[in-house]
Length: 129
Image 1 (cartoon, rainbow, N blue to C red):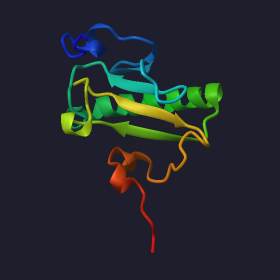
Image 2: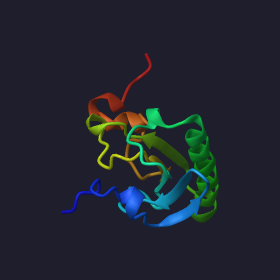
Image 3: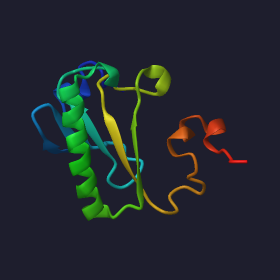
């Protein structure tokens, strides 16, 4: 299996690009967890979301909003998860910032409570007493 970081997959071989702006682009995920799963990717190679400039963050958020509208029109999801993995301990496998925009559909998970908390399964489900 080839290393997606050598060279960086998002710098040298972007696939499924749906739109661009001056500082970022959006693309459909090559291994989607749901129909329409998309990525928002800054053009500049940068591993950590926390190292992006304010302009890069704004460019990514602009694309996130436009892509969400496109997904609403194309797939009519019932909800979304939005997430960023920062560092290998958090599951980041391509060391170039990418924001996941994951459409969610009623019934796609038997117990969706906890949403992004499900990255640590024992902590996903909680109750309010």
